Length: 335
Image 1 (cartoon, rainbow, N blue to C red):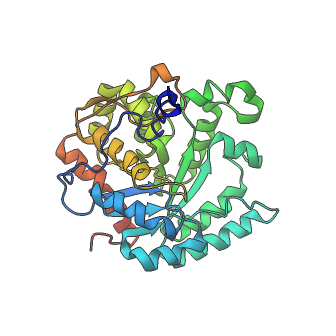
Image 2 (spheres, rainbow, N blue to C red):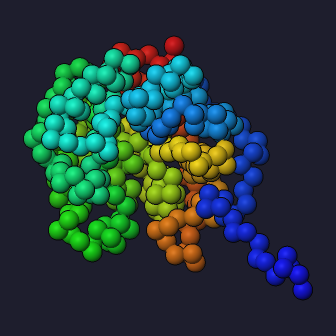
């Protein structure tokens, strides 16, 4: 027996465990106007070729990206109006003057057209920086942003699998979901006259009751449905309730992929995320998710259960809601 005969075949990549052909034709969604991804992370202009090859294949026209400011002008020169920027701090550098530095970067982003400011209030981020969501120092930054007419976006919470796993192992460090959401509600109340976007379905797609209560209480609150593995797992597990929630709140939800670029990521990696989102929102497919979910054991990998949202809901999710919110802050992205 030869060595070649005894070798096992290579394991499939984590982004395609089921052998999907990500280059198979997929028609554009039946919407009027641009197909807009309102939440992503195109980190560098050099990542653009593979990113936009996948975007073009799946019909996505425009992105709102949390890129480092140092990359914004290069991305803008290469891809023009296909990318808008969401203002973020320099995450890896949080020194004693971080509030002033964040305010300076806010102005820099504003000057290149950003009209959204993002706060990353995930439990891991809060713990690593010894932050609290209701820290008054954040008010200075939020006050400056809202005085300029900017919207606020936040990542609050994380998957239930994390709260019941690694966060539960050290509650004193990471905190509990309930305390995180009480603090967020305080901010929503303080800035109730300004548009606020809760990323990743408000960080709690496991609880549509909580999300509905927040939407009912805060009319300016909107949600995006970004994060691929998280959405596939949790939306699919409660498919009927999710569809009802999206239809009921069709004017308050925006599409986002949470796609993240990297030097080690290629067309197929990016395509896997776009493929899953389009299948999840547009179709009634019942198929194994092609992307490995590290939060579940190998024998319990997710089954994608598509919502088959009505065309009118997809029109708002993919286009109308983003256009309406941006027009309100002076950015007419459909012109």
